[in-house]
Image (cartoon, rainbow, N blue to C red; front, side, top):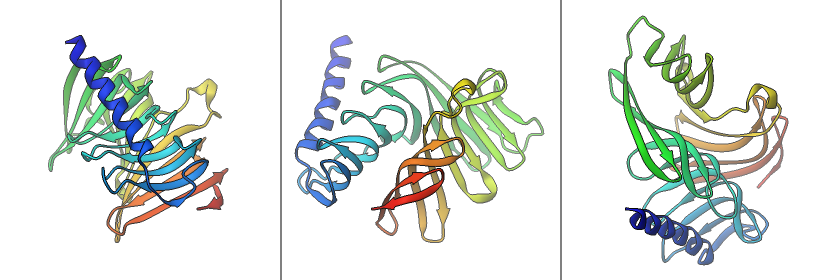
Length: 250
């Protein structure tokens, strides 16, 4: 079992490394700055920021098999809180040294229920999982799980929160703004680090398709690198923000 896990981990490392070695830069600066690259042979694609020709900073990476990752990349690998899809639906959770660690949350929606799967990883290995199902029309605001300390699904007015709670505070997962067709995924800093920047991903339904974006945030405002994708219109955008205002658009 250990050998299989090791081979899988090394194979994933190889995929990320080869993707960058063979990239063909289509736009921008794929060495130091923002760039868009697409390898015509492998179909590997990256839209985001680089340092020394390696993925570094906010980016979107799609591997040849279709798996994709929105992350704050470090040394070419997904790092910290990441939103990704490896063929079984959208998932969010923390990566460390390209290994999944701690709780990851898989989004599973049905017409009349709210479904989420909690996945627990230790050093890249899945060690536990549990399905949570909440009735959408219940009067109890905590639709499933423990919305005080633990994993829960909490509905408050037009907001649906799915994730990890501690002492009644949301500490990691997805927040849906139901009235605006917007979903945000993030792991906010602790109260004593409230001014520290953190990674946030959001998607929203527009008349022109689904927009997906990832950026660094400080407080409630974009502050740092920002990327956006709209697959329906083939739109790729990037910018640098300061205190909620764009200071450079690529």
